[in-house]
Length: 253
Image (cartoon, rainbow, N blue to C red; front, side):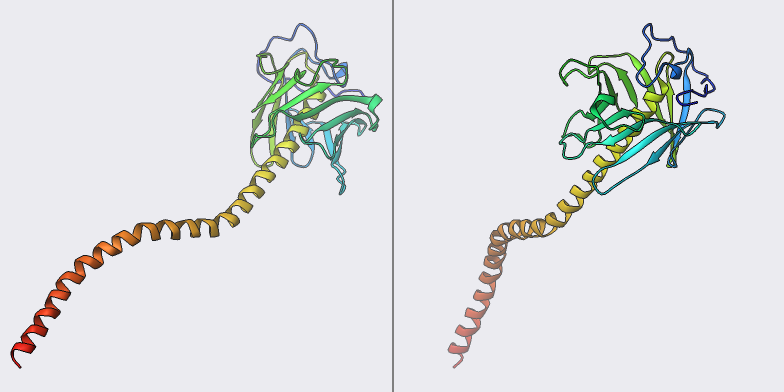
């Protein structure tokens, strides 16, 4: 049935459950033990035994990137949609197949425009406060409950190899929500890395002729006095020798 969760095999790490459960997509995705999941490049999300718990299906267009997070029975749990024409690279996550504002569950945006790698802030649709106070923060490989001052960890990511990485979701935390948040953050990081690479490429192409001109200018300024000094030292003995020969020739008729 739609929305029913396959209970993933628990991870081996002990961690006390949060007093207040974190529920965003559904309470069926809560466990009283840590849940270790692996997210592969093919979109499959598996537990420690390799059992598929979720899958992420891509539906990219020229306008925006849209993805569906599905459960093991192929039911669409949420739709992850990139919001176009936003400075902070915002994504929105909606209930089921909907993309209507009334079905918005949470949104994610970059913490800063000046970062080479993305720190993400997540805001629940029910959050009545300003966007300076996020509900969750993805910082490095750690996901925190709350903003910059929080030390409450709800999940951690571990890169395994080029094709997949692991996520450890702590007890009483909606692990479907964490998977959605990780997928969005990973896409934002990939986009940000692409921007950095493009900027470096452009800068390199521009810098080469500029650097050449600067080098020539500097070398000229340095070379002129050096050349003058060298020329002066060389001219004096040469002139003296020439004068000596001229005088000798005149005296000898």
